[in-house]
Length: 250
Ligand code: URA
Image 1 (cartoon, helix red, strand yellow):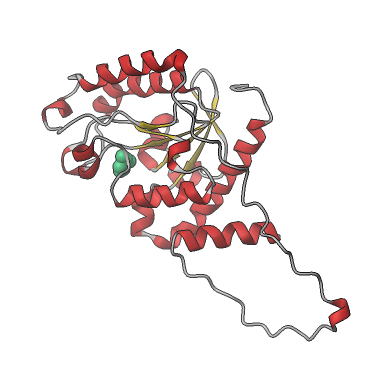
Image 2 (image 1 turned 90 degrees about the vertical axis):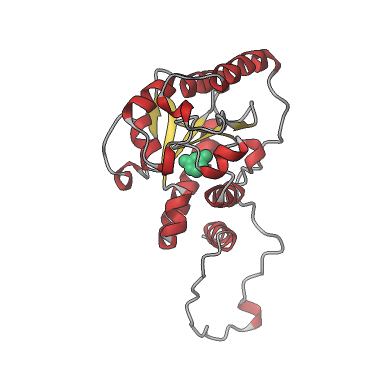
């Protein structure tokens, strides 16, 4: 319980969620019966893996894929993009975060989740003790849909092989789909996101575990939902800890 409370407090503080305290006057306890105060904070989650350099065996394959994406003209989005947004992160990451598509900031900077939603995603990752440089972040689409409209099915289908290849190269222990569009497309379902949360799904032929949570942009619009996202992030922490005890990809 103490550990739960510490985890929750840290997330809520990180995300700027106001914390409510029960105003209860504790009955006086004689000093001899008082429980000892903990002297150190309990660990919040498993320590995050140290950032490691790109895995040499696959770095050439990553470069080839990045070059292919860079020159992609498979769908009409190539005509309106400033640049492609391939993905970013640790090529030895255990956790792959998958978003929807680049927005205006990402289109300008060429990196996923660098705008306001990205700042919140960074806080969520830090709260999980899995900071941005220890995970890999990619989107379903590598190009920005104009006016941030939802991706069209044909655009998702054209881009899907790129994410597929990223997953093959990374071989993450766990995937975190952020938002309805990423979750529904990865899981090939139209089930509402509220019903996809709270379960460990399996993705692809490798059966990679996949957890769904709300998109940080949605959380910015609906801050009261942040509490639910914390439940999801704790599921991620627990599942990662469980998976670490197993051989990679088993
Ligand atoms: N939203 C996403 O889904 N991806 C990004 O990269 C930025 C915003």
